[in-house]
Amino acid sequence: MPQPPRPPRIAEIHGLRGLALALVVVFHLFGNGRVSGGVDVFLVLTGFLVTRSLVRRVASSELRLGDHYGRTFLRLSAPMLVVLAGTAVLMVTVMPRSMWGSTLREIAASAAYVLNWEMIRSQLAYGAAGPSASPLQHFWSLAVQGQFLLLWPLVVLAIWRVARARLRLVLTLVVAVATVASFVSAWRLGIADQQVAYFHTGARFWELGSREAHLS
Image (tube, rainbow, N blue to C red; front, side, top):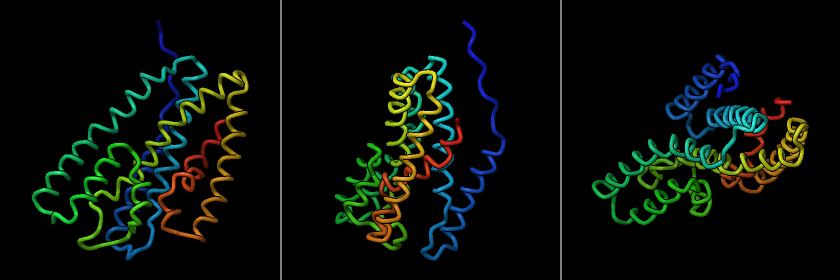
């Protein structure tokens, strides 16, 4: 059975990914505690590309959740588990025993894509440096993306089952409302506690949703 044609690749995406990577590198070299914006670019790209793919596959009845989750998380988990295993080895050979407990919790949280919530719970500062800094703190953004990748296909599929022919319109409205709510939440939470706002999934959805409303 012939497969439906896939949408053309967007060459500009590679440029944006390069910009995001450059921003992250510059931040760690010269940031002096300031936020780079590179992670924000990656989150925007994730929201756009994932939703674009899901809408196309749902509309053509291609989406199978089991296959989708298997491919998505296998692609993410394979390199992640290598890093986590290497971190565990370094923990035993290099780090003091006093840090083993917190590091093991962070390894488990990273593997389960909930490190951002673990960092909120343990009150770790992203810009912190020195021996007390988490060796896994960069995984917080992957955790946010993993939570999005887990839940968003269910949302898109549920909207499709209800709206069918109006999938794009209804999805655009849902995303617009959720994006505004997330932005307001991020703003208010940022005033109350900037550190929690930085890692909070709900306060980050507006970045994931900011490009999705352009699908209609």
